[in-house]
Length: 459
Image 1 (cartoon, rainbow, N blue to C red):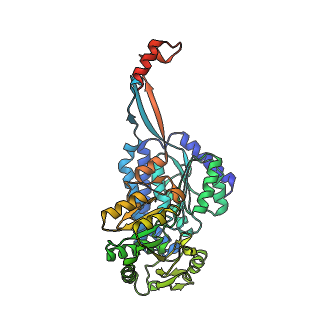
Image 2: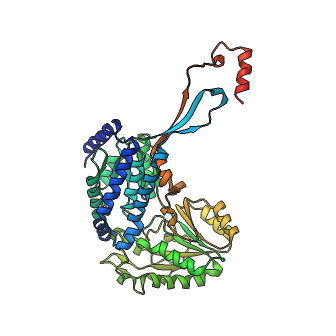
Image 3: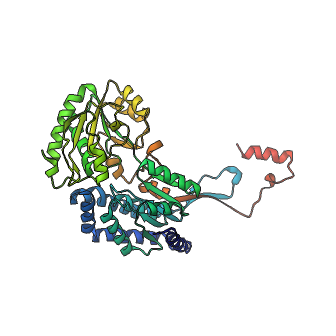
């Protein structure tokens, strides 16, 4: 699709938006209900597409993508009427006989650029927020997940006319053409490198953005942690979707005293969850493509393999792998891994751990396993990160009651629930002034009496 075709679709969407068709709360709720119905109607085909692109089992695909989308849609259906109302705020004494309020309004035509690792979730969840806020939407799914992209397009065509919501498929050329267009808002989920390009292009048109990027998310295990439970939840969080999760624990950072017990328990939990031969497990997925498979295989020669290391080039599979004796200077620790390799680092004190994490770019997520309230409080207060969990992994992104987003190099802005509605809304600050009284003190010519009145009212 070339730039002229994209501009034509954008023009149609802006014309549709200008009619006000997306403004009424009932219209927004009707659209959300259509989307929910279409997801349920096409559930098997959607899960099959995820299996084709990422090797996801039906259970994992439903649990980690479709169920979360449905939850977000239902949350918006319950709350959108309240979110869309004008909110009255305090009016100062000097503006007596006025009403001050904030009115949320949609930005207009928004662009959602989604990645390949959770192609359904990261397309439809922000779509639900954008629709709830009253926008028209263009979705650009990743070319790396073609079967799922086709299904996203199928579902959207069943639900909505293209002037309201449309899908634009393609690769780098289409991405570039979209970013050269005058959208009113952009939400991008993906790598830091591409995120910088999105922000650069958006700046040329002064388009506001939400960037959901990534980074090296640490998983801290201190000496007070429940080691068995920690290992169980770390194995789930790290190896679901073969580690191709932006908020997966990127590395394990444990107290040196608990490392032997933790390594032993991690191996036990991998075997319990995936079997002794994970590559033979029909519910274990695959790496998205040959390029990323080759990139991950090059990381195996760093450190010592404690468990795993098996690969299958034909199926693009890499077994869950634990790596010990890794250095902070190894390439493994310089970039986000985004695969089923878990390096283990150690610290002597939490203060040392906090200092090290803060010396690196702020991560999208942080996980802390501990039973000591002081330790937990210390990490929450002294380490900067986007979001995370205490004594668990990943589940913070499944809570519509709070926003999900990064900080620093891991992203900017947030969405989910109210934060998602706010992300796609502009807040108009308005004062409605009555006409029956007009105090003269603000008008020239000024005099001493009016000066005293101003000082009395404005304090």
